[in-house]
Image (cartoon, rainbow, N blue to C red; front, side):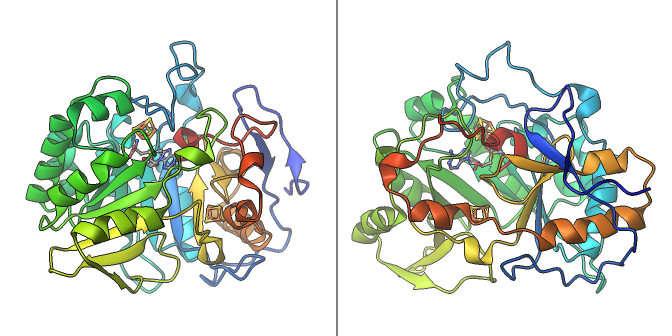
Length: 377
Ligand code: SAM
Ligand code: SF4
Ligand code: SF4
């Protein structure tokens, strides 16, 4: 059976437009060498396992929108662990080497360890293990780190926007104490979920005073602290350019206290610019998604909780792979459907935004962009 290409399927539980991928009549097997319309390979798959979260960070899930009446996905919409693993296996055959579990808050997904165990059995066509990681707000990390490690998770990224308890509580907007996240980071380190990365979203005027205390705290710890520019993702965070602190200014501030040297990226497509403390205290990173677009090497695809594939963080159009998973399709047919989707990809939102005057960029405009909590960071 073959679906018509680019047919738009309106589903009752669907918040964003989605297209059912077409299954080519002639099936071609994955080669691991897919290339999109701008010559970019497919290497990194980010899988959102829940659209729910126990935090209400204003830059991601502002309380006013994500309130008790918000329509989260019903349980039967979520991909099961078997469905996620089946798709992941197909994407690995197409060249994916790294899988990041995200959300929402991924540790809220019941029995997430079972999914990690299943994903950990996958290998690349060359027989190499996958790089499996997870991004978490850290609230449940102290209690879950050991079971995550035992299940096969290799490392974690923990989001932490400051050390000052009042600032942290107000940024997560549910009054969650910073000490509990720090405890989670310690336990993760003790069980060997390393190297740990710490993500700090910097909002000018809100937590930029935390840049130096964070750097002081994580120097010599082995953890890599990464400063992220506040992005105009989604349609609900009321993003304004004035609140973005350009990475160049973050580096300037750090460099004044701790001299830094720029270092080469670990691999092509790495999102963070890397810097090393000149005194040997470790490494930091900056993710300059607003001021320095890195679309040229973007090799990431994102799978939403309900099985839609998004080719860019800023798109509003998904490709509904759940429809294929739950239809009568073989792995070969689904694999053959992935190729044309990636090959047609021309997304490069951040590059295009860089060419726009700042006052024309908004998140509350006409375009219903996909929310970060839905497809993950
Ligand atoms: N709940 C988990 C967490 O916070 O780590 C995983 C999901 S969260 C959407 C993934 C990452 O996206 C986090 O590091 C978060 O700080 C980042 N993020 C969310 N909204 C953002 C925004 N508007 N700009 C920049 N980063 C953002
Ligand atoms: Fe939750 Fe993470 Fe979004 Fe904060 S950034 S609201 S912790 S999903
Ligand atoms: Fe990739 Fe889209 Fe971000 Fe550019 S804007 S780096 S294409 S996710």
